[in-house]
Length: 311
Image (cartoon, rainbow, N blue to C red; front, side):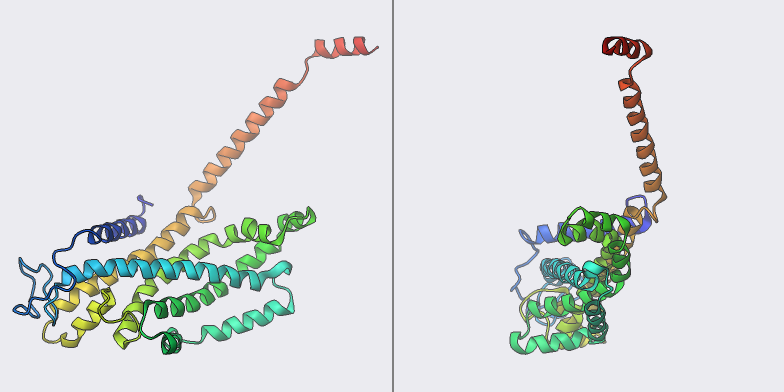
């Protein structure tokens, strides 16, 4: 991935993000609740490299602390999307490669639920839970899992209807083992792209939901919270909005490019180097097997001696 422009950019940005998260857990320029009342809406300076917001909070401190919150949201959304997506693919494919009536009914339900906006789902969830990170995770996981099921279902159907799956069933292999041994590897490249897009979109969803007041609660640092706070006076103090906007843009682009790079590097249908390596390994394995058979083959004298001994 380092030899690809998109892969190198994605890895560099994500590594920088992880380093900032690790550093912010032990050190920040100021405390999270520190407020400089004499420098409200201050621009970049030696004391505050990125300036301050309307409450006098240091923007660099809040962005560093917010990186941990964003990382937690992304990890939770990706994990929940993976679990729900695999369950949805299992339900859509089933033991008959999606040919049953129940599978078709399930896909009609998936197509219908995809039309429900993520913001509407978040609003419905926020009624019992209030403004919390759980609202973002539930709404995003629900929406992204349905999209992953819709995209990966055709490939999963082809894998489930393949001859080697039928051979596995004839030997009594369970459906769960078949699903994770044959179907999941077939849809893994597509899942990587969908999950990377889900991770990037989760950051955008957090920013939008927090701006609407149903996302991260007040007092919890996040990039969306900093963006929503600074956007109130964007025409008066535009510099305070640039920093969280640039960070969100850079990370979202890196996450989207990460999925494409992973697919191109790990999929033999796209990466010609993997096909050449696999072919070379197969040829080498056949050569060793042929040498072994040649070594174990008896020569003419041994055959004659065995015939005489038998007679």
